[in-house]
Image (cartoon, rainbow, N blue to C red; front, side, top):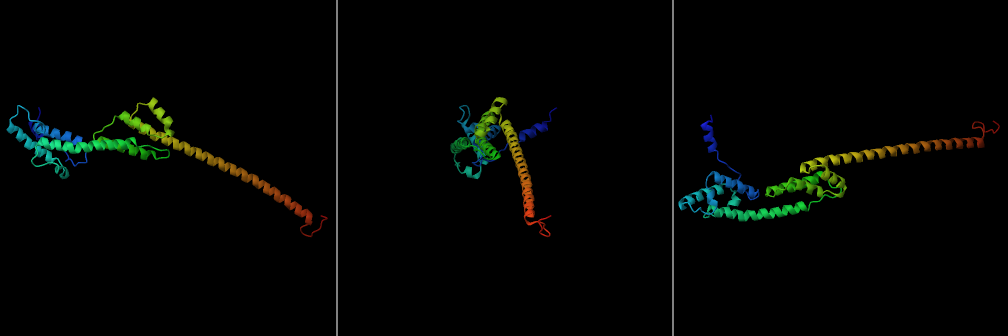
Length: 246
């Protein structure tokens, strides 16, 4: 049996949202705010008065809706709302101010995203971070992108040296942004290990050639020294008495 006390407590829960400060996602705030007005049964006040509603009832709902809207606005945003405005006028005023800003923000963020390009030698992690920040900022203003489109765009922004990687991703995998990032990390790691291995090989071969040259030079020097010594002994005779007879 359902506890009636639990039902009453659930009904007493009053939904609340963070006051809109002019910087957050206006579309999302507006959607949540409308749901609060629905819960309070005053959502008719942000539209034209229904023909079947009595004027007094409409004005009562309007007053309550206007109060609720204002309580969910930061001070700097509340300044746009006149005291004598109706709930519907306040709702439309917020839309006219912040929808325009939202659209401008979308265009600016899209421009930043499309202008993002990774050059040869750029840090991959830094590039991915900038890319994901652009996507995140677009989502904040209500411009959510499809995951597959996002993944393809990230591949497109990679430099020519990733040509083989791009081809492999497109023809071998189901494209998702998480899969692209995961495989990019592995690809770059393997590439660095291969470069490091090649560098070690060149270093070892260089040392071996150096030893060979040193050994050859040593033999020659010793040969020259021995020959020079013999010549000197023959010319000067015995190194003790100077005689040439023995």
